[in-house]
Image 1 (cartoon, rainbow, N blue to C red):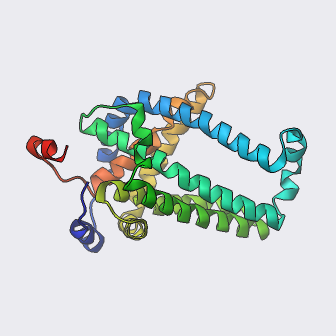
Image 2: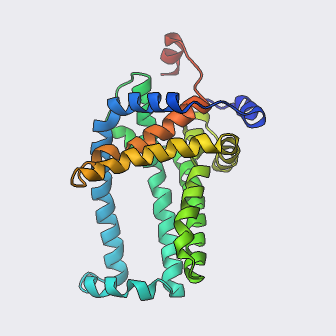
Image 3: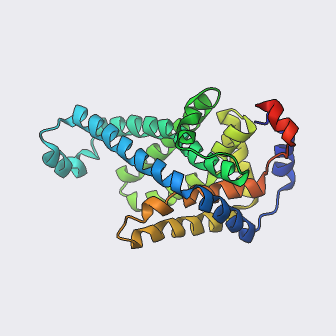
Length: 259
């Protein structure tokens, strides 16, 4: 992966051009090649998450009074201790999921460059040197999201929470790609990612909105279709990075030398 930020400085200072049509072309191209692997990865992620969340819930509240605890959630959600525990857990879980998100994005790069695809790619970024910065970036982002949620819930403004979650998501659209493709640390990835987003906020918003709409269409197929369409969000994310920042072309000899 690259370790230079000179080209990023140019993009931040002078801006860049985005074409929604090209973003869609790239996203559909990579999605068609990778969606079967992404579907299997998403199913595995759901199963693993179910066991993890179920285990945490059981340890925290007990396995015998599940129904009663769920009925008390609305009351518990305003309790300081519950809010603190929720803040910590949601931030850590968000951080632990970052390498998997990186895998969903990277499988599109493998598809775009005609490389071998596999389920293992979703877990590749738990290895150094990527895990630390991926974990810390999403820990910080998850912490910010949780803090905003707590503030809005406490002030009876929870209805605006979704707006802030979307805004934070848009500001962080470049964070993971900058870490795994530019080898940036989490602070620089977040900072430069925000600056890049602010150069083309409308185009990125429209592209991500189209990605979400396509993903939601999977719900029309008795909700099962979401397993097949969910990963398109990450295809759009990759396509935005591909068109905004791009990749340094390498010859076959260069690639052999790297390997």
